[in-house]
Image (cartoon, rainbow, N blue to C red; front, side):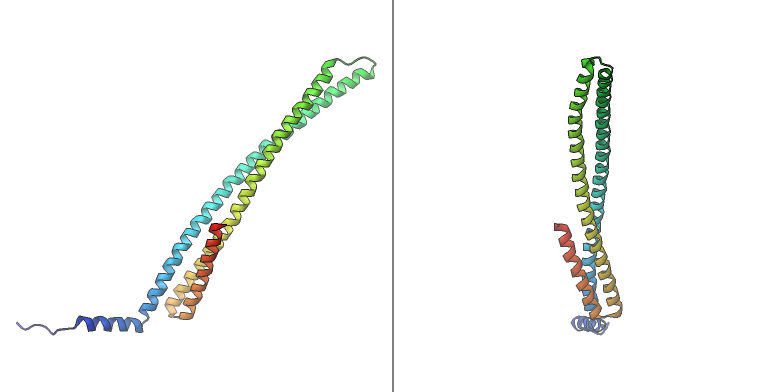
Length: 193
């Protein structure tokens, strides 16, 4: 039985690669690779954006809780001040009619004023903790915005890469790379900051 015509595989592979080069095969692979890399960065940046905003929301909630506790302490502080004022007014009423005021009025007024010192200290500590939580949350929100901007840059870069692949435009691909590199720089700055 006669054998079929022999085809040199090496020449066939070369011919296929040449055709792929003519059609931009290598160029399309480069675009696909860079787009895939940028997509990985975009995914990580999106995760970081989400996690930083979640952390910020938790801290803002904690800050709000601390503010409510501080407000309660300030209300308690004012109540003690009112009680002290009532005791002083009662003492003054006794003195206005020319009688010595019972000692309990002075004692209670002094006790209420002493209690106010501790209450004020506790309220100020709560406000300080509130401010720290709020400041940390603000910092995280700032980081979130930078990560979100990074994601936007990566998305634009990937879109430009897709357009470059469809139009086989090296200029668009280079533009895609420039925008992608800008995103990477902002990503690193956001990650470290």
